[in-house]
Length: 417
Image: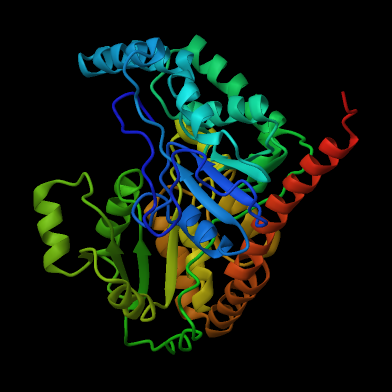
């Protein structure tokens, strides 16, 4: 989160407390969520799913710190935001990084007063993660941290400020009672921890029935490859593929996503051919996804983004594995999705940025019925074993209970005064 962005928002479907009005004597353990990332379907659907499914076993509260007048740290934060708006973004972000969320400390202390039997949950993304870290230290509540992205690589910081941010980010992992890295690459980059469990992005659990069987391959029909998701970071890659596939009538790539940075003429062309489709309802999206022969998952080849590609994990991979169709990962060799695919054999790997290599891999898949069926089976098996919502929710809740158990044990062993 940058200085120009807004702080966390409450989740309407969950309890939202801004003070100690959570019953102090409640028998249910509590999750106090504190982060710049609001756990909503629009902002962070992965956290929204975890927290929704955690009720009623846990009392879930989402705290949204406010900018309080008279707080000197708030004044510094506003000055940093002004510098960023005036074009001095690196300076503003360096000051914002130096503040490290201290503007929220007094508000958080009031909100946590009187609480018992709770853990503090945060995402390592933005300054409120460090505010959560300090709050856990002051209160003695255990800290649980989810690591989805390599945050130090994201804000526009100078080299010195970035090194400070990275040390602080690693210390966040070391101070956590429980740490949830999203991928094996993230786990390796963070290093050891007291209790660390890999937690892939959890897919939707609202779909009751399994998807229909994959369409039968027919030589006369185009092999339909679907991509849904981020077109901001991956728009250029997808554009290259779309342009290249115009000369491959046996393949058809269809894309759903937000406004990509494409030339207006190319946008119009892709809209007219129905290769670029607008956002739609969940039901319409589901019907569209069920028509695929295969799904494309992309991660960028830009060397400047290597650390992020090594550590993040594409949520669409966990979503699409459910359908039992081949997964095709187009990404550099070092990225997390390729490492996962190599380890499990559950996806086709294309590690050449040239779209001709992607085309060749898809042509091979479309021409080999046995490989096509086998890769579909492997994708579904990966969903059942690694990505099923019940599997991932169990890992999350076991981590929360472990943090509470360790905290209670430490309290019991603490000598009385």
